Image (cartoon, rainbow, N blue to C red; front, side, top):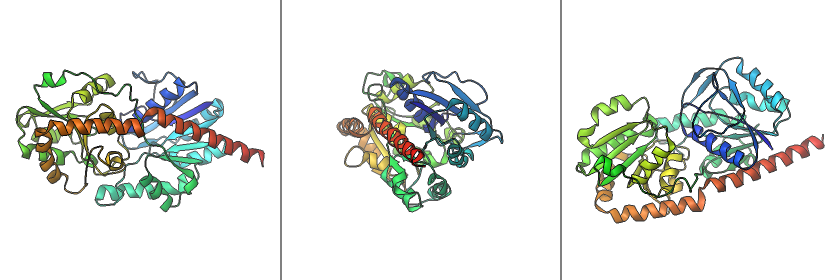
Length: 381
């Protein structure tokens, strides 16, 4: 089967990780994959699948959204005509091209599947979540014309159905991680950092991630020099936050870490992983930490609370995160037996529900179902 994958290779974000992991796995299973993405030249990225690329021109590209050029739609159409894939899978990049895809694929008689990534807070409790809700409202009429839309949780599915997407077209396939690669193991990072207890945040340093709520709680708690908070990632708020929360507070800023082996080494050293987001989809970073056997604390934004429920981790309300962390941080410092137990439960939860292999089995079934439906519709015309 030939899959035309429309997604992202840069800048680094959850969508990029999703596309890399899924397309690598599809190639390993014998699928033919062509990768269409917004770029000006061939990519040379470590751990990316070796498959044909199509470059779509753009005016602007960020972690959140993309502005294509006027020519991109024509280039995409011509490329699909030339490639003649069996199916198009669009890992949506939040660009105007997303809205043209159903029309293009209908003209070419190509089945079209979307993966819809935008984060959300199902309770619409804050300005950021309200903005994300508008994104769902904007996309719903167009997703109704895709053959299937993949989301990561039942909460997302219910939201899209309420907004008018037919129920039979919305499929829940959670993110998955490679549990062989992301697993507990030895790391000497704590020794290098002179830390007995290591707390880690890994992700974008931006408003929606609510990072300052964590930093305020950490600064207030004065956990001692044996405890270190490691901030892994980059973003628009990093420079300003780093000025106020630095080494004098036992906070270490690693910046963006592109090497996957290095990120795994960090997670293996961690005692606690903290994700204080206001909005989320289903955090791959959270799943990676859980797979490495790290005790996890996360807000109930998006599907993250669903992942950690029933004892697999500690779930925070998105309101007043700082106050909640002021109570939890000393507890996790003083009781290593709690972090050990929660780490074991986190790993077990990933093995039970969120492995990449499970994700691929569901995806393959979906591909087969959509192709079978499309063939029936064509033969009955």
